Amino acid sequence: MKKLIALLGAVTLTASSASLVVACGNTTVPAYDNFAKLANATRPTLNEDGGIEQKGSTLVYYIGAEDNLSSLSFEYALKKSVGLDESASLDDTFDKLNESNSSTKGFAGAFKGIGDTLGSSDTNGKDGNQLVETNVTYNKKKDLWYFENQTNLMTFSYEATGTEIQMHGTTVDTVGDLWTDKATKKILNDWIKPSIARMVYANIDKHNQSWDKTKDKELIQKVNDEINSRTEAIKNSKGPLFLIIRNGEFIGYLEGFETYNEVTKSGDNPDLGKSNYSADDLIENFTKDMLDVIDNKDIVMDTYISTNTNYNLNSKASNQWKWKHWDNWVIRDSETSSESGSENETYSYNLNKY
Image (cartoon, helix red, strand yellow):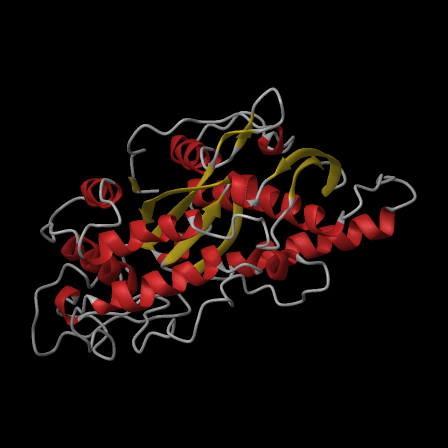
């Protein structure tokens, strides 16, 4: 992973039993460790009396690729939206975005306003997301996830949901590295997959039944097949990706973005980058569809319910999430990206290479 976006602001890492998954042991990849710290910090916690001690929060984690025009265009738009020059670092850009509030003009205010929307949800808990915090373990020898127990923390209740929302992220060299890069691979296998396992078990274990690892072998295998299918759906996404972590669990993602003329270089695929930067791409499209995933009252149930066979975890986004020009593979490769322009120069757009 080429670029790590630093942890911004004072975020408290909470230790919760739901995050203790016997799967990976001690990690040795700093970029992954920082992501896990950010994601786990969104988890609500209980006090000694079982009440909510700290409300949860929301993390939008961006993963882009440096040979992907949609990724470059999003970064360009984000920098413009917070008043920074194109040469600004992503660290500084996320810093300025996260320091904003809902009264800030433009995209920054709209993005932070998502948190306010979450905080104004139904106070009587009628949002249908009263899922209990679930613990799972992984048996490496059998390659199976097992349900262990549940706590009395209602992870997605109104009482457990705070208004804080932040965006962080990272970039890889090519879209081919999206899920093969050492850090992003660990994000998928060591954090997202355990989260999917917890959420799937939480949804089907309505009565806190006791799972017998011998008698329930077929059912456990069926649950694991579903966990694997949902993980593969994410692995097949092409980016840029926006992973959405809410209250310590992975609840969905968005992928893709518009492409802009402003970030193209000589030699790039001329079929892409036909549009110009528009603030509405962030404010009207991106923010609204992100809110659809984050605040949809049934998103958790619909995404993880055992009878659901649609593993496209961004399917709840509205029809606005359809970019006219989306470079879902590569706009350039390393051999042509640095060449100077000439009439005979050609662009590289080799799908098979990646």
